[in-house]
Image 1: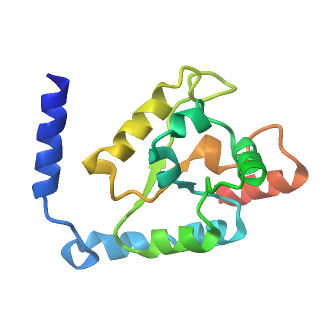
Image 2: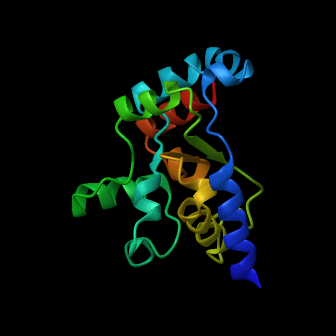
Length: 164
């Protein structure tokens, strides 16, 4: 039953026309609000997760649970993998007017971690792998996109810059 519903959703999504900025008058207005975000992306205060990293086959083995930003940065450095978009890629994704940057924030399940059971990460992967999520190239997820406590002084500066 679930597979049938998923196939039906995928078929429906495939038949929808792709919107461009010219098709929706609100998109250019939203893009004008992006300038503060562009500054935070360029400085590194905010990092966007690479959707392809989360979408990839085998990503569950590489990232079985959601890590805070500092842990993901360490993973990038130690394993030589690309977890985050570069600042240039992030700005390009944001400015593409195709709204390929997704944002995810919600009430955390505990004070220390937003996804103690791994449900959210599994569902995000499921969405990114579905035809309705295939347009997403970057993901803002507060826990992984912003420096988390404990933070260094430099990380504190990034965190507060990102909140502006």
